[in-house]
Length: 83
Length: 158
Image (tube, rainbow over all chains, first blue to last red; front, top):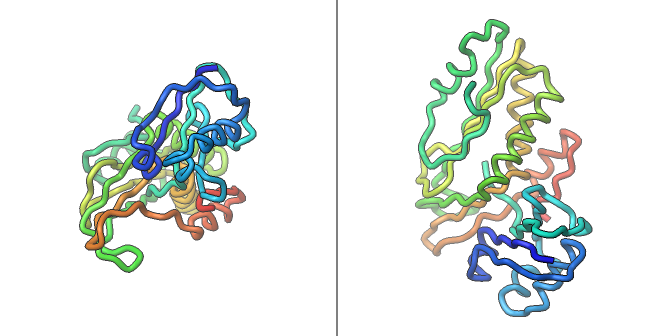
C-alpha cells in the first residue's frame, strides 16, 4: 500500500527531507519504522531502536502496533518540546 | 465565536483575548491565564533566539482534543490557546492559555491541565541558538511527571 511519511524537526534535518510517498508492505507503524531503519544511513541513525521516537498516524499520537491503511499519513519525530 | 486554538507567527495580547472570552458571559466569575515566554538561558547556555517548528494540522487537532478533555474534567465556560511558531527572541511571548469558570478552582486547574498536556502531547519542537551553535531542545522528564499527576501517561521524553 501507499503511505505518506512526514519527518519533523531534528529527524527532518537528519534525513534531509520533510516527507516522502512510499509503497510498503509494512502492516504496522513499527514494521514501517523497521523498514526505514533497514535503509541504513540517516534513516537508520535517526529512527534506530532505543532512541526516543514518537509516531503519529493520521495526525494522532499512536503506538507502534497500530495498523497502517492505504493512503494513511505517518509522521516520525522526537519528543515534543512546545509550550 | 472566536476560534479556540490559534497557531500563529504574530504576537498576541492577553487583555484582548480575556475580553473576548468574558464578553457577554455573565456566568463568569473567574478567569485564569498562563503565558509562556522565551528565556535568555536554558540548560546552562545563553539563548539568543529560538525557532519553533510544528506539525500543521495535527497541532490544532491535538490542542482541540485537549480542550475537549478540559471541558470534560472541569466545570469551565471557555478556553483559548494561542501558540506562536517561527523565530522568537528572549522576552517574546510563546504560548497563551486562558480559561473562564464560575469559581477560581476550576479555572486554575483547567489552565494548568492544558499546559501540562500541551507540553508533552502537542507537536511543537524548539531549536535554540546558543554561543555553541544551534541545538534542538530535549524533552523533560519533569513535564511527563506533571501530566502524570492528572492520571495521564505521557511517555513523551523516553
